[in-house]
Length: 134
Image 1 (cartoon, rainbow, N blue to C red):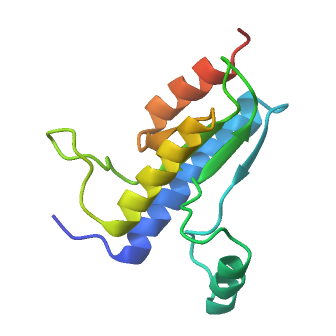
Image 2: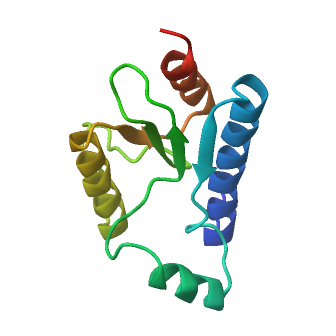
Image 3: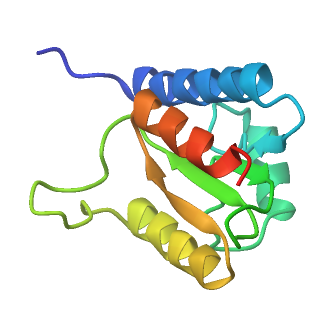
């Protein structure tokens, strides 16, 4: 199996983010959301500017849905190209991934529904559950 280059890997994550945004726009047009562009391919100047206006060491999730449902303040999705978990359920190694996990835990503590997502069908089910009328 051919190894993906870093740019191919990032593009796959972008495609997932784009598909989720398209799904939200089509099925939930009244729901406000924003996609975090920080991890997409940015120029050096864009990366510098983003660093200057972001909270230091906070790994903001890729997709933020501004809708209070189920007693939660909003839904935040950290999108991944593949599962961030090992077969035994532990988080894979990596400083960036560990930072993202810490952000997810902080957001949960603050009353948000936040987690890793990597499968479009699972994401659609989560969005439908979260956004359907209760």
